[in-house]
Image: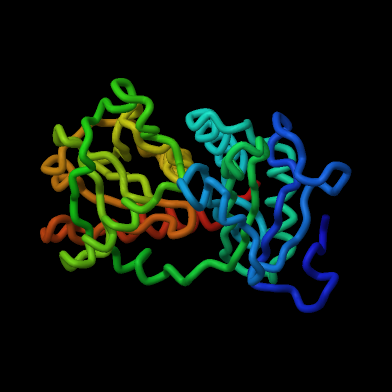
Length: 306
């Protein structure tokens, strides 16, 4: 569906596409209709009865787009499916979502950096048809935080580091729409004079940011907190590790405390849209910024295409 939004005038800076059948395991919303269709982003879309709105019962992914090409698209689609499985949602139709994502990107006015958000909800209670849409937009300018860094505080997430094994029903590690806590902690960080948060488990181990992965350097080794901690499988972190290995750095996973994190040679919060933001202050203590490695990582991430 190339040129989806170009049929009716200028190429926009946002695009919204609604899927007719987000999952092959559920009926379409309109039998015989196209797989997806463009929708005016300024017009109402979601039913007031949709469980995504009333219960936060759904999942999402945010995909970075560089010069019209999605980054780590297949990894995002795999994580999207994993989150759906955790919530026992109908499995997303990967082909339909991939096509809708590419159509949304193609609809945008060309830009160096954009992003695409995919959303799947359980739909209206009792209806049996999930709701799915793709929203694409140009990204804000993050050049300042990528070079000057961010101030971060650590906050207790309220459960142990092994919650994924002990309490899988808490959906730790799934990217759900229930983001009230993630937004609240950033407001708390702002009240403490900081920009961002690193979650710490109740038994004292570093986890992740509310919308980012933690990456740190110790000597010639680039590390992130270990797997199985109820944190997201980081798509940007995985891309950074591939870059690091290509320039001769070792990579790995490590369970660590905030005190150990403060001893690292450099720390970053990494995410799909902001990319690698170096941490310049942690709980009020200054941290060194590895400017050269930060610049190399962000150049690599911006150049990635699929």
